[in-house]
Image (cartoon, rainbow, N blue to C red; front, side, top):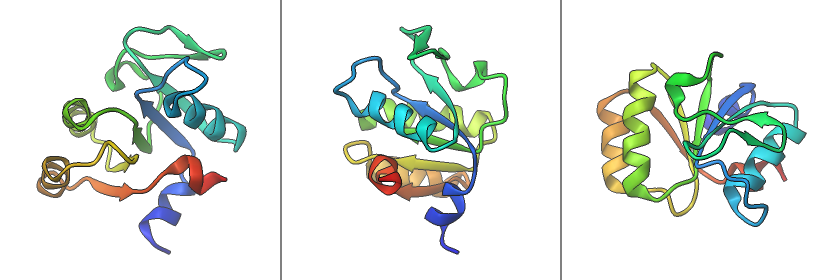
Length: 125
């Protein structure tokens, strides 16, 4: 089983860059994960809820075990999120298109964080 398949079997996902804008991938990913039976923890410091799901200001505030973090923000914000991933001891991150950078890849490798560079929205179809 490859890393993509392995992480897709994990049920507790945080979405950094979650949004209440129904046209954004930050919204669509939260909805699709939820619809497919995942426990979804939206992360957005400006929101308290997204479609009835509690939104958290950061990964540290999520009171549940997070298996995978899906990052849906620009690379300069994503690198900050990666540092929070490390602080929380989370080992698996999905990077959406537009989020990826060499700096993030290097940080992940240096900190034993496994990256999946794929779109979870499309993967769940």
